[in-house]
Image 1 (cartoon, rainbow, N blue to C red):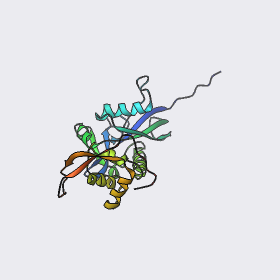
Image 2: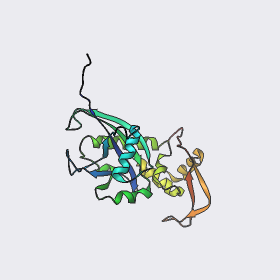
Image 3: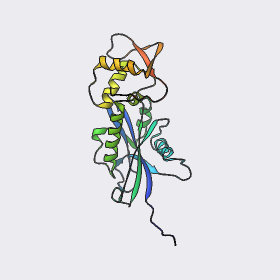
Image 4: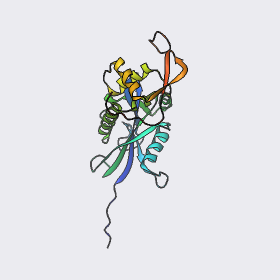
Length: 223
């Protein structure tokens, strides 16, 4: 005899993170149906079988269908589960975070059901979305201190001044600029684009343009 057990709902929630006005922000969507209809919440959805080949594929599909963005850096965050997180019953959510570069922000703003909110103001959300956002911010700030993840908020080409300000915004801390540039050269994860400069607001002269070297870089110590 085979016992029959009720199966929990399995879904994916995504925390898209971006910089706007040098503030770390996320994207919320107005819920179109119950529960919590009309309230802002994270982008999420059920796993579609057999359309989704993996949970990561579900996360990328959710980003495309609900925010119109694709080709992003996406990383699995954690699993959130239990009988009380969703009024519909016992559920499992595998949470992901993604990094939305500057050039993709306009695509988000074109959607009237979406809003860009500073992460510290994304509170009072339904389900356990406050907890998921807090975990995503902690992960990005923790990993950002010893990896090139903050640079992925920028366009493909950037100045060192822009990179410095981005690290400060993502990590939410002041970083000495001369020490930052010295450590940047030591870690060697960016390369200059010869012959290419850009005019940066506040700079007295055009700035040299750089780009990330291929592959994700992880350092042996913090910036």
